[in-house]
Image 1 (cartoon, rainbow, N blue to C red):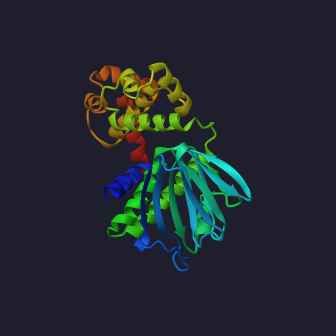
Image 2 (image 1 turned 30 degrees about the vertical axis):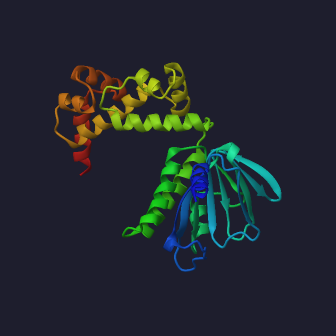
Image 3 (image 1 turned 90 degrees about the vertical axis):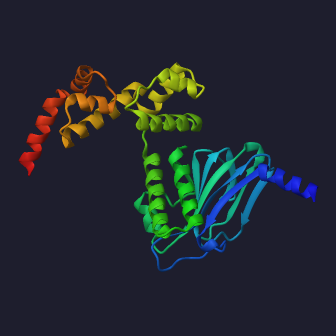
Length: 304
């Protein structure tokens, strides 16, 4: 018994699986009445598990999207083996043959979602998801994993309205895929993309605090110069300019919607010196905060 328990514990560390299924059923079906229905979502992650194969000669009756979040997957598409690296998705339509492998040596992590419905094809076309191939070049983004995870959690918890929430999350996934695929700028590596997305999220949440770019870069084990260069390449602007734009944007909202003084607004968005804030605002918007508020309200009153 001890040997069996030890082997089970070892296998648990070799392969991580966490999935949710509609009605807790693993049996796929074709939905003919509802526009869209999410059947399952989850993740597989290989550590030292040697190989995880999937072989469905006649495919499935539902649709499937597989997102390669790390490592790579080996897919047999149109009779040829194609190595699909992280930062791509594979779309399987109903009844398409499915043959693919993940290898432990690649430390692969994938997320998946199965879905069905009478309007699936038109929904995918609406988001300009190509249906004439298999591979979607999406790049790596944290929001992809977040959306897959949320769908899985909804299927596990089955809270009130979970099927409606699943359709919202799926549409958000489609919209995010569309935006990523339409980006004109060349995609950076998955590691850099993930780190820059993490930095943006941190700046958005902490823009009104004192932020040291040097300290932030060090906290992520990066040099300041490397971080600045990578951030500019991905975001098109420097980290400090990115933070400034967030502050100015929120200052505009406060000037438009409140009667707070300029000094109070400066403090809210992270500046102790209202004069310094006013100079930055004038440089960014071409007028002082007070003139901006006056001009906005005159325009607003004229429109109503």
